[in-house]
Amino acid sequence: MITIANTSRRTSFEPESFHYRVDYVGRERQPVLIIDNVFQQAEKLVDYCVGNLNFHNADSFYPGIRMSGPQGYDKFLAVQLRSLIQQVFGAPIDRIRGARSVYSMVVTPPEKLGLLQRIPHCDSADENTLACVHYLCGPEHGGTSLYRHVSTGFENVNVQRQDAYRNALQADFERQGMPSGYINGSTPIFERTASYEAAFNRLVMYRGFNFHSGNIAADFPFDSNPGTGRLTLNTFYYF
View 1: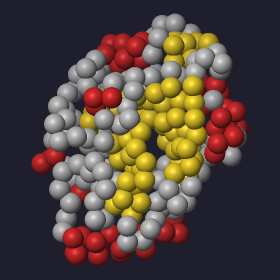
View 2 (view 1 turned 120 degrees about the vertical axis):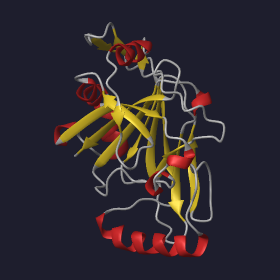
View 3 (view 1 turned 30 degrees about the vertical axis):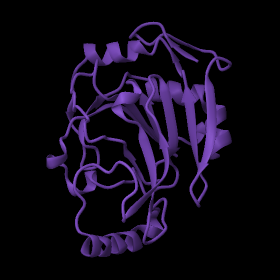
View 4 (view 1 turned 45 degrees about the vertical axis):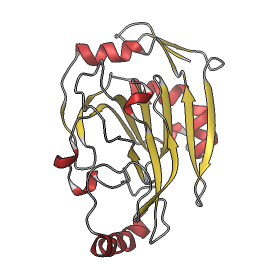
């Protein structure tokens, strides 16, 4: 368990205190690492966000706002989880060539979504990228699901698959029509292969080239207050 004593980031680690499991998802058996109670006093991460508000609109994939995470969070997390990262993903942390952590909040209503925000996406076509979602909110805000693209059978997209996926997706839209609103379960174009409920202080880690999307329900409140809304701390590692 990681302890944050205050927002200046004095920390300690007690590996015997947290709980984790590894799932191998879908036909391609991609690993997903789920850790509960990863931080002690994780509410201090919320306090840091509230005290340093500097959100901005996110990229074309994420339907909301983001701001930089606490300095050193990404490096500290990698060091403390080094054995799990190596064991589950075969990725030694001395090969990390870049990392970033961002607070994220879903605030975009369905009618304002761009096309790429209405379908599952991959964070990178590089299979040596890891993505982490650290939930700083409760299950009522929705978790994260992984998906399979039905017509190709792809559960992830690397560089070699990009052209085939784009062509097949365009053909899907021509047959099925353009999607509307948030995806929150299987559709004719994408099949959900796994779903992970949000839980305060839960961390979910997977390879960034896997198809995934947040579970945003029809009655989602789109609350932009980090103390009460769907606050996550997302980290990306590039190996």
